[in-house]
Structures are given as C-alpha cells and as structure tokens.
Image (cartoon, rainbow, N blue to C red):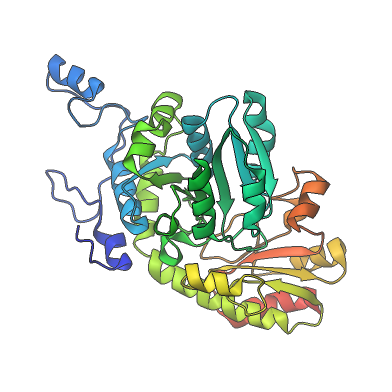
Length: 391
C-alpha cells in the first residue's frame, strides 16, 4: 500500500488479502489451527524458516489484517494484537522487562493500569515510580540505574492532561529507557506518538478503534526489532493473551470509519466543552481544545484537535455529581468510552475506585469530577440531557 495515501484511505484498503473466493469484504477465519502440506512444511513453519499460519493463539489471517491496517495508520513497522488494552500493556512489560527493573509512569493513568503497575508487577520485583504527567523534570529525577520503561497516557484519563512526548522521548533515550504511550484517547487520526519519538504505542481497541462498544481488543505497535525480537511477541505466543479472529474482524471494519467518527466526536466534544464552561454549577472543564486547558499550546502542537473526551467538575462534590448522572435519560451510564453513544461516568467511584484515596488525590480525581465521552448524537440533545442534573 502506498505511503502517500491519506489515513481514511489506508483505513479502508490496508490489510486486504483475498482468498480463492476473491471476496470484497475481508474474510473472517474462525479456526483454531492450520493444515500443513507436509511434515517438512510443518517443521519449517514452527522453526520460523517459512512464514505462514500455525495456530490461532499467535497466527491468524484476520488478526494479521487488523495488525497491518493499524500499523499503517500509526506509521509503525509492526503491530501485535492482543485480547484487550490491558493485556497489551501486560504483554509489553512482561515481554521487555525482568525482575529488578524499574518503571517511571505518569500518576495520571487509568485505574487498572495503576493497579497493574502498583500491585501485580510489584509481586514480580518490577517497581514503579509515579510522577506528574506534565513535569518533564520529575521524570528525569525519578530515573534509577535500573529504569527500563517510561509509561504514560496523553491525553490522560480522566483529566486530559497532555504530556510532552518529544521531550520525554529525549529523556528516555538519554537514560536508556523505552517510552510507551497509550494513544487510546486520540487514536492515530489525531496523534502519532512514534513520529514524536515514542518507542511503543499502546491501544485499547475496545474504544474508538471499534467505535460501537461491541468487542474487546488491544494492540502494541513499534519497531519490528523491539516487538518481534525484543520479547513481546514471544510473550504473546507463549502466554496467549490473544485477539480472537471475530473481534479482529469487527475492529478491522470499525477502522474503516475511524477518521469520520473521530472528526465528529471531536467536533461534538468541543461544542459540549464550550457549553459546560458556561454552566453556573460547573466548577471547571478539562478539554485539550479549550484555551483554558493548562496544556492547550502543547495539545495543539502534537494533536490535530482536542478529541472526544470532556471532563468537568461540578459544584457540590459526589452528591451533585451523582445527581447529574442519575438525571440523564439519553446518555449511557457506563465506564466505557469511544462509542457512538455518549457515555458518562464518575471516575472516583468507578474507573479509579480501586486505587487509594491518596492516589486519587494526586491524580486530581475529585468526588465532583465527571467524564463524558461525547458520542455522535445531536449536541443539543446531549446538552438538554445534562441540563436537568446541572440545574
């Protein structure tokens, strides 16, 4: 596929490998294993001397099609698909790090990511130091001789803090660490971290890549040497946090409309953010597209627009925030995001409820904070739905 094609074209035409039936839509290969022509071919496939499919835990044509398409959009050498976004993070860490290694991570992370680093990895003697997402000097100060990985989300979940990928990349390279960026909120349509110096890009394909809340999926992208030879693929092949062929096919088709959906999500989110800023019972609005956002200039320099996530703090704490949620009739009360349907959540009692109060305070996740993932409904209908609880 030509490198000169635009993202919306790549998202439709990359990764198509037609079978003998010459189908127009991508085929879905629902099989656990693949047949070899001979014993010699089987041996050659297993040894890696001959490319080809072996067993669906680590090779499947539908999954490969998704990997090729997403890699084209991120301008990555290769992509490894996983069962979920969290398994993509796990595969990256377990594939590249060893007991005794150290991670520096943003304290503004999804709650499950914090728990993975703080609790599970700690049991395997991999320690994590959490620092400000926006203070580059704090990352450098946290580095130890055994630091192997920098990990961040930008924009962060849920406060949409923007980390300077280019500057953190320079620090990581200076100390010999890899920089991994969770690109879930932006997708490659709005941001390409590898072009800004990141070594790894992580996706929860469950979110915008699918786009309709149908299936789970994840992905890790970067240089072939790091992913295939560095241990991530070996971990996937052995441990098996594998993306199913059916889920790969669903997300593959979701990618075809990614550009048009992201543009619409972003347009609607900007309208919602401006409207929320005018509401008397809203204390503060966090949205990278607003001039009031603390990293507005940085967001403009590394993102094409603000994206589809708006976070806002209501006056009155938890009771007021829950009232806004409970008064909705149209917006879905769920912790997922990236759907055509708008979703609303109270992070302190849902996505970030399993981390400590101290960690929530450090991350700015207050009791009055709400996160809306703005969908594709008419904006005036969404505003009317929120107005009841904000009145």
